[in-house]
Length: 190
Image 1 (cartoon, rainbow, N blue to C red):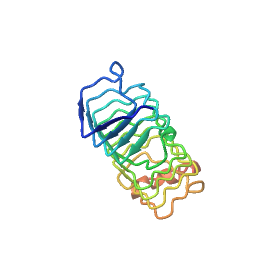
Image 2 (tube, one colour):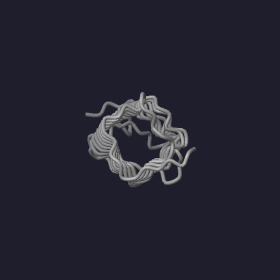
Image 3 (cartoon, rainbow, N blue to C red):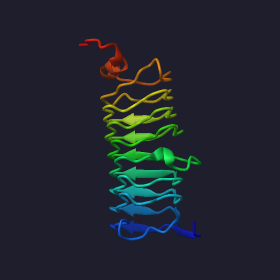
Image 4 (cartoon, one colour):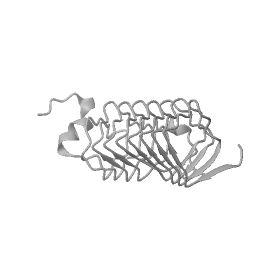
């Protein structure tokens, strides 16, 4: 990896599928309406960056560092976030499309997911304790041996979590979503 470094730069409407994103470190940068779809972001370091209305679908994230990142209005289909550099991994998502993405075995405590579509997202063996899922669609999201203690799901919907195979102590749910905790029992709940 080169010694490229960018600080406090605004990147606007850049298609990184045709324009090379230099390998290196990006700090306090803002990316607006940029395209990273299927781009190899391996070993790139992003710190305190904001991504607005960007497309990351199917981007390669081998050892990519996301440290204190805000994703807003981004399309992020099929991402393998478990391949990211785990050191300092921290981000928030607002109004993002995260369908078919994976957080397998990541430790992302206190993560905020707001108004995002998260269909078939894989949280297997993930630690998302103390996180917030605010108004998120979790249709067919996978929670398998996940740590979701103290996580707030009260405003989210289409939740299906098996309390017997996940650590859910002190997690918060709305009464309307309690049936998602009992789905495996095939009960008729009115």
